Image (tube, rainbow, N blue to C red; front, side, top):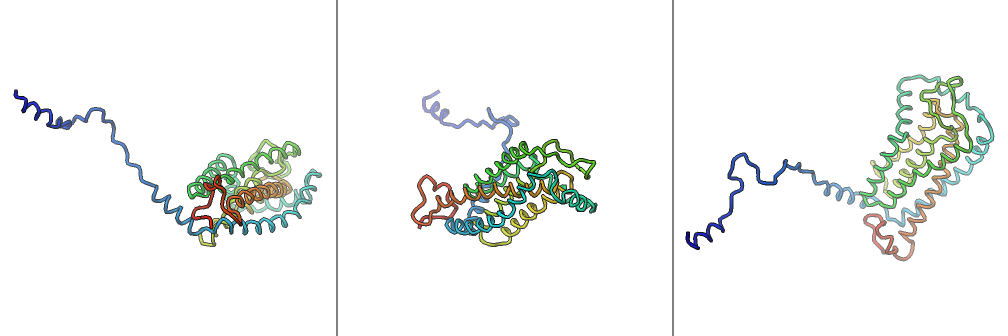
Length: 289
């Protein structure tokens, strides 16, 4: 064999697929093609940026909301003091009996569904999920604070251990689900007040009015206002437990809002530029003037 032929043989590519039915060496099972979701995320971020207000305006609007909220909350503190000093709040038994007289199936299913999503098996995934959505939309500060609303559970556990009030029993009311822990205040109400309350607050102060925004605010408001009656209807709490849940939850929520506004104002100062270390937490579309 000549050198010329040898060089041609070496230059000729080897057909690795010449054997029918024999896959190439090292080839495994075909890999599934995953859909490219980056364009969807990018488009969602664009819409979020175009429909949101500026960070500075969000701080201004949030301050007004908070002042009004604290004004409403101040009158409820007195009811909390009464509830802590009595075994039964006036009207506990009568209100529960009146509410439980309505035995329509649709109402029972509605109240059961409203309460069910407040138990950990649903509450934990939805809290992480909402925080993940906000993070993907580049509302990263808001994502952190949505996760922080879970801290209301710590306050609830402390107050329950201090008060040690027993839950309603079958001898007094109809109890749908027996829960072996103290009753005062309602943990469901505290969680809903903080989690759904912060979602309302974020939507109301960071986005312009629109169908999706207003619908989400309406749903969250319905859940907050319905969770109290649902816990009474199902025999899980006395009305005073529910009232205390709104009060303690509201107090904790006011602290979360105050901290959120403080950090938000630091990221979006009225005068000057955003600190370099905080620029990653700026809202999408925001730039320094």
